[in-house]
Length: 75
Length: 346
Image (tube, rainbow over all chains, first blue to last red; front, top):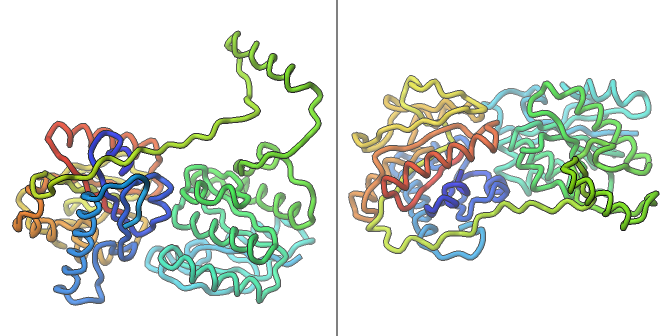
């Protein structure tokens, strides 16, 4: 889906746990996530720490969208 | 001949998604589909052990899991390794592919797995290993196991391996010499004549298909754009109003989030059948990070969050469907002036 949305003209970043799958299907901007059942969280942490972790990942994704790339890039 | 068989937690009879974090373990003899493989292999080969690893554990620790599985295979003195088949299960396909590639390269013994052509493990590993083509579901177990067993025995005995069509494996992109009854010139003219007449013909050199999209230029000013969220992690309003399937989705949902500052266990849940839903149901922001994006919107880091998000499930959903969903969603987003997208996947 990331590839098709980008093909349609909207820059897209894929936050995902299984990076090899994202590479194979052709997402251009890839941000590795935490774990399959909680890509943007970690139930072992406190609510506050977990939200900080999630924010860091989303901020990384926004930076990826602001970065000029020539080819598929894992951030 | 001694065989070691690799299975995920499901086929290895350890458990479902709640056991997907299982670390590699060994069971003696054949387990689950291994019983069928043993029957097909006959008396000349014996499955001495089955290694089972959870799909999440494997793909979240690919290098370490591969090392541990390799060490177990070495301990059992395997003559060859069978993995899967993984059908259209993405994580399982990656695991089977990584193990077979490591077995062939590092232990120097044959390894065979099986997958549906759309499994992401195929694109990653088809050049390195033998992947027998299977159906997308376990309905293809017997046929896939028969082809895998036949191919594995041939490899183990050092017998010559035929073309992908003859043996049933996915083309590896290798070329080998053979004596053709007609010269290249006459075969080419025959092919051209068929083409001119509109008759079917088979090329001898298929062109590779590289479906890549050139990366778009970056977003210039994040603080001036509207950003949209999409997830393949199956987050839907509680009660699943659109009756989205838990796997092999035929639809996606578009859901209003204008009134939400974040997602809660009361407002949203996951319908995804391919991972343990406990953590996503507890706090759906772990899959669709609405709470954080609202903060970033308030702080002016982004101008606005699009008042809807889109969701589907990525497990077992065909590539053709995913492409169709994405095209429809993109059309929607473009007409509403969305300039950047975050997709989250489990």
